[in-house]
Image (cartoon, rainbow, N blue to C red):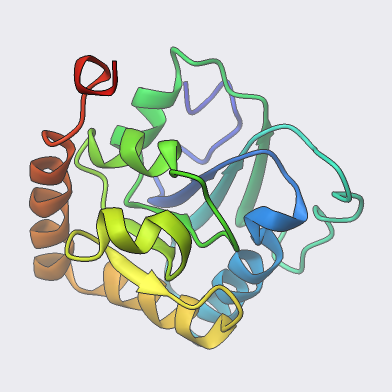
Length: 174
């Protein structure tokens, strides 16, 4: 699956999954990731952005670190669990979410999350992931750094994520 989407095979990655549109705040996620790379040039981490282009997404793929940021385009639903499981973490710091289903998909794979400190995400994931102000690139970068560089913290968040995922099911939703 990683080869199919041209994701470097022997490098860890942060994933984000969404339609590429302004409300998803991918610009600040990219800026934060690029700042992390510039401050940590020996890190082999990549950013994988999964999703089709949406409204006002022109130019989103004009990035400084083209060799470290992968735009996959549409990802088949059957491939998502594989990518979530392979990802070091998910960064989903959107400006607004009604629920945040991609975050729930990620935590059900034990993938730690960085989420926007707003809307439903704050209520759903406050004790189970890392929150960041969607307007604050520095804060997003610091949360990326915390999860990338601290293996014990990563492990703890992975366990908490998986535990939280058991609170949700389609049966309960119905």
